[in-house]
Length: 396
Image (cartoon, rainbow, N blue to C red; front, side, top):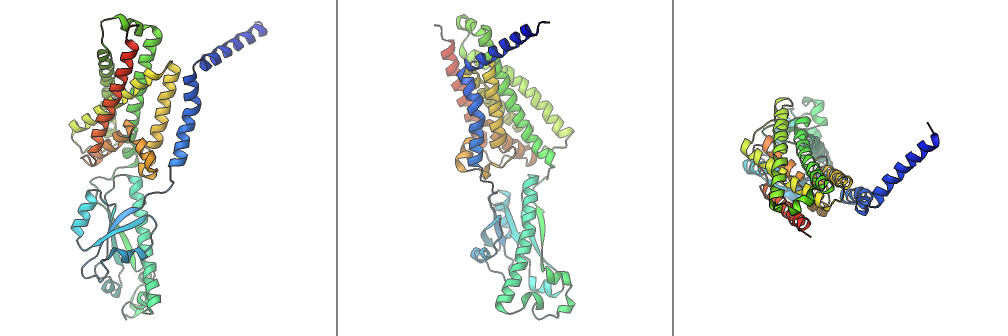
């Protein structure tokens, strides 16, 4: 073996690949600027702080506590914002079930009498969350609320000079257990959600939506690009086939493939991973179908703007990267700036994740507008790809 000839062959191959990349400026731009722009948007758009949970305080009629929400602003608990105070527990819980608020804080009934009996006053915190991470965060904040209430009791007692926390209305302190004196109030957390899924079950649905989008985008983008490079698109120009027929054929073919993979994945999630399935199967199938249609439309657009398989793969991976950052797969969308949130809702997977989690874990669709958003995204992307392909297939 001649090492000089081997070296020249290797250098020739290196030069060929570099020239192949450099002669396609679109690929260079997507390769260099794409990841940088996504990371820049993430860095500038992510606040790093969780949104304060909106809470309503339910004041029992005989508790003697104030009903003015402003009175509770003195209890500064990070992560919680008291938006209302009411004696109507049923109305507050109804707002919680409609997801208008995040927490219902039920003040203890006649707390002074409870403390005089040597028992801790129970502060009930209700939530309606299927996200296990968010539920754990709310439970942590509930303990923080109880600790803050205890500090407020001591603060007001010291300010008013009544020794409220120590004397408890004149009762002999020796009759009260030390742990009650140290912590007069304790939190009881209640989750009103129908099911409380595991982390695997909850994020498994998000992974399903993400995989379906990436599969559809990649397969369809590569299919069109390969037909262009193989010369099949030149045959389509002279063949008696319409652009609409080409688009429908591609969408239906890959839609059937995606639907089969989605059905198998759903069965595995439910049967093996124990993911609850509370929603109607027909509505779940419709949601998956809309997600597939929107994802295939995105794949068609990528295929039209790509001039090679390499660029199609790059754009598909950039779409996957953006989806992982901004779709709610890892980080909640409300933790981003509003302009980034608006961009996140342009991704099909953003709506697919939210709708599938609602249908599987709540049995209903909490935000019907997201169904309409998927329809609009699918329609716009498929129409755009049809227009671009029609222009490409027009005979010279």
